[in-house]
Image 1: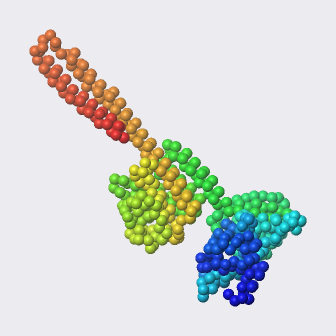
Image 2 (image 1 turned 180 degrees about the vertical axis):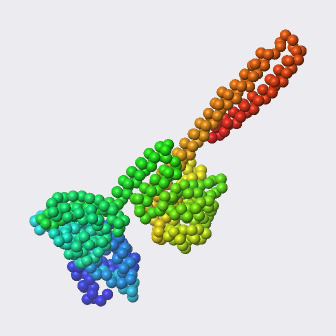
Image 3 (image 1 turned 120 degrees about the vertical axis):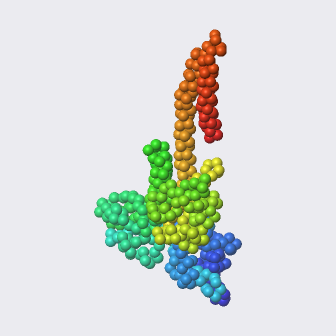
Length: 477
């Protein structure tokens, strides 16, 4: 670096940073270190992403991808965390130099500095706090134009700052605004009443909570992604409902599991779920429930053998471990089955075995299909784990119920044998004993009586043997 450039680098009030291709700091100028409070040693080998506000991380990933294509990005705004925990809003110009494969970044500090407690400084404090929010914040005027916003709102919309300024709020497609949401804003303008609402953003597949505060012809809005909280509540409600259905004698296991899968598909609209039961004796799989899988596909899969290359479910059952297939068309595990899936636009399938509580056997597999190639996200993996646990409870509970019913039936059979089958030969023997001529032992009738007693005793022995067999079975169970 030439001496003039070194002078500019060190004396400029703007931020100058030099990073490697992985985004790790090589050098940062005095302004960067002084304002943010870091030493050269603290920055050395640290990654820039570690200093970004959590709400801006996705935008930084997008930035790095764009940088690989365009080599030059200007006007990118992000919040950088200072050593004291304060966030500074910085507008960056970033250049990827293909010659040395290094990233050169210059940044303008947009955050108002404040020292005293005057009115201007209070406004600066408020501005700084708003800029640091995880929660999106914006203001629209009476013509529905966006006149102010913070980086978190920009991250939600995935638009550049210059695109948002004066943009008509109702035309921001990424917000997935519904007629109900827009009606709430209309009411706020007309009635000057604050309100709160929640809605599902179909564009981003996220739940958003919106707080609306009208003031002097403008509306200030806080918008927050509540997908994680909302999903947890919906899953808890679904699990409670399914366990209640499981306790009802009017629902079969198949019906209960179908209700569980339909509930999951409502919470995660892109998912298509199924549960395959394992025929342990023959090593095959059969659909227990698959509310929205094509019937033709289910028929083709039913009776498939488990094995090391048996699609997602057959392989998961064989290895007793989760199998993630992100591309059915190319994955070797689906070589013998993709002809059944692809005509129905089934492109990805993740399968998890449902293993008994004592780890003795695989009870079933829980599969999630998608119409596009994709890998699971963290929240989806957590949902799959919870669902697998619920399925274990449902299946084992049903099997226990069936076992109790079978034992009850066998006990009833034993009781029936005891009361009827034993009583008859015993009564016969008692009657024959009474007919025995004890005074004249050589009476020819005595011989016939003894023969009858012998035959009846053998009959009684067979009945007792049957009871013993059933009792042994019960003990074994």
